[in-house]
Length: 55
Image (cartoon, rainbow, N blue to C red; front, side, top):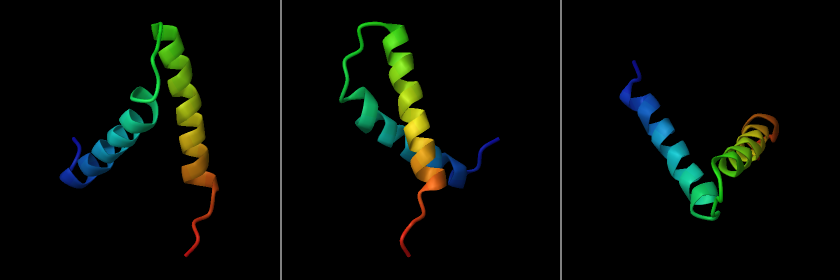
């Protein structure tokens, strides 16, 4: 079961996903949406886990 702290991260991710992908694209099929989401997830994971943050 998720804690309130974990839920905030999930909600933040869903907001980013909605803004970056869903509101910026019009999908003509389920396959196209799935392909776009896969590309977005790959990009998001690359940025989050490989690009160092400037501190």
